[in-house]
Length: 157
Image (cartoon, rainbow, N blue to C red; front, side, top):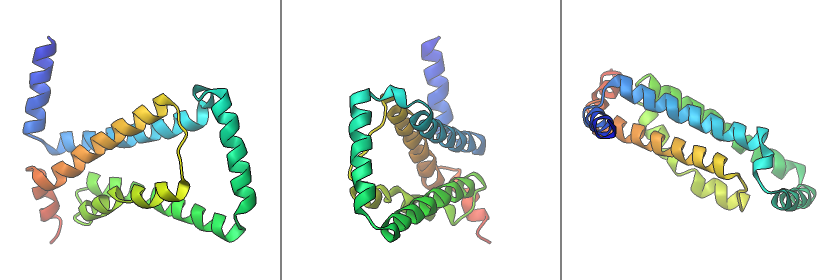
């Protein structure tokens, strides 16, 4: 049974359809949302000593930065969230501008994470976020290197 399921899965990916493409995008978005929800709704998944240390660090950081800098960080964060949602929507609707937008968004962690310095999350949150990223990467690859890519070209004109 497992072998048959694997074969069917491999065949579906080798012959991607718009339905599979959209399913991957939807699942990627759902897993990313679940990762964020787990982080905020289940803080007990992170050991208490680590949470206490992080709260202490965050308090000192908040005290040391100006309101303008904090506002700028929040503005960048909200802008990136908005662009990510727009990118997901554009891919889902086969918009030609969505492919380069999603490739550009792939490089934002190289800007964001060095500014933030570190990330404390539970194993579940990290696993859900990583899986979301894998699904998203497959979808973006399909948008460029599969028969699905023709759908983006038809929307250009």
